[in-house]
Amino acid sequence: MAFNQLSQDFDVLIAGDGEEAVFEAIKEKNVPKLIDADIPKSVLFLDNKRLGELPFPARHLVDFSSYHYTIDGVPALSMIAQLGCPFECGFCGGRASPFLRKIRTRTSENIVAEMKHIFQTYGIRGFMMYDDELNVNKNIVELMSLIVKTQKDLGTEFRLRGFIKAELFTEEQAEAMYRAGFRWILVGFESGSPRILENINKKATREENTRCLNIARKYGLKIKALMSIGHPGESRETVMETRDWLLEVRPDDFDVTIITTYPGTPYYDYAVPHETEPGIWVYIYEKTGDKLYGIEVDYRTTADYYKGDPEGGYKSFVYTDYLSPEQLVELRGFVEKDVRDKLNIPFNPGAPAIRYEHSMGQTNIPKHILRSTP
Image (cartoon, rainbow, N blue to C red; front, top):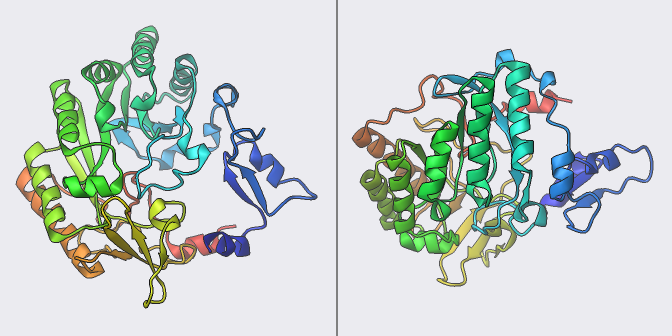
């Protein structure tokens, strides 16, 4: 259904890695409607070698004066050092797709060469690493050591921020990341409820999540806890477990959003039509039988599924057997306000009315601009 909607608006669609597939899409003749670059044996699917041979992003085409992202006050740019995440969280998009599940890594030398290029070309020494999970890379400590050496050679000091997987986090990784210049890490803990963690297929327990926070704190790393509600089986009790866990572990910052059933997520792909309610799709987590109800959304025209203004801009397109969409919005607001008040963590200053995508801080572009953009 989602594919058919997109097909109405675009001449050619690409599934999978786009870096080389895009050249197939812009050919003048005999271009298929769908270019499938999501097959590992395809010449369009990037392996480690070809990923490392790609040119660095064309940052000279970016207007840096309009980009105001900083890490601990240091101007920063985005980087991606590796592709793919092997985990299969129920809410996460495309995890049955090889290009999003299969890990592809660049060498430590190649990653650091890009950092060096950015610093020497643009004078930028802050780096936001958008890898799904940095510590899925088995060479993460080696990479951090090379980043330390590069800073010494350049006579400068980097600041970095990125995502890690809680149950894989070790003291050795934490110590190495701090030495390399990391001061913030982001972790998708998602929930403080053991039942919800099971229903998400998170593969990390509440205890492992707590241990991750303790390790980070021991080595001077601040943590932003990325939390979400509205999963299968979500109830007032499970939401309160999330609230209580946040108050217990006291992260340096946090984010609570209402889940969205994007096309490509298990919550979307494995849902079936509701027996009596048109436009409602039902996902059932087989191990527990807990259900999630998704309200059909045309993502081409509806932007209200984005995380919104903390002062009331949220809207839920999901509900459970225990909580309505309105109750989920109400509970989300209560948890965020209550935890922020008790832990003295202010809302993001200066941007109360801008909508953000969960965890990424991605601005939601106004619809009239989207419509008028070529």
